[in-house]
Length: 457
Image (cartoon, rainbow, N blue to C red; front, side):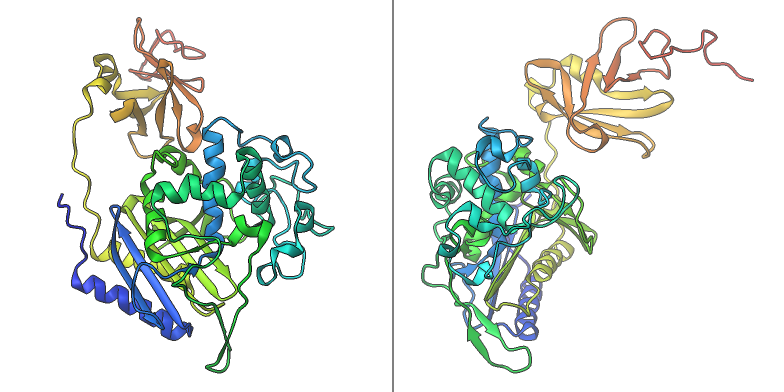
């Protein structure tokens, strides 16, 4: 694999054409975009009022929620909370949402109101809602908690308050210390810092415009306050693709990308994870977030399978579908210049213990054949041999060399226990016994095998 991550000239032209078309047809003063491949910012483009560049700020709206979710997952990984905890356990006295779990708030399944109490919070100063109790109207609980997906902006304000309570510092300070500084995101701020794009409302039937108000939303900031640049958001995209031990590891990011709840209105969405939207686009599953505030729309999508990310900004309240644009830019690169596979390498010697290597191969659950593979990090992969059936990856359970925990699908969270010794080596996976031959009579298969064994009729 070469270290050269540059794009072909034809790809550059196609990306710029899509960006320019979005600006012209969407009637925004400016549209900016960027693409990240294999951890490198390989393209930036802009059309309209400003030249292409990495350093001009745009408001990113609800992409802010992903930053807030990362802060909450850091609290979980540090052992300061469990995602199953009720919010009130850590934020006592909260007037709304206290019975919801932290996972429900992260996945917008707490049933809380979509918007903060009026007037329209995105166009008014946060001083109108100084306390958490001021965020909600009298009918805050719209649905029973845990019943389904209902997007809630003030729900993320509660998560921001949770971060402040457990870290003992304002949300903006925690954000800067725990995410922005480690990732080198010096141009991501709560309020705009020059150079920045002003936000505009464009008249729907005439080519005229007026400025949108620039507001500090106060307690609603964790839901949509941030301003960022193509260069900074590209750094965040690199982090979302690969993880960074100074912020969150790859395993926790994979957990965030896993659907926690189905969308209320599917419409192309595949679900919502923990602070990340999940969509299907062009045969790919993309994870990231879209955002909007008066005067701005933005989007950031990642495709871990392609090691690609794309982002787009526009400084108009409506008109430019930045979510679609970012997905199109990502697909343009993936289709024109498919990702080169990582080179195969043997695993570290420490992971290749002879008994583990001997554990691989064909196993049978009843009469169904499965293949067990060993990967680096002592990870096991169980795959149905015929393609039909339940498979999963399994991560080692710390402190027990013969147990692994499932990572996805039906077996997510279930324990695989390997018993490689004795007259009938077997795997016990959530009480399902896998044996080297179908219904091994010496294995502890419930009900055993017929004493006559396998016979014809």
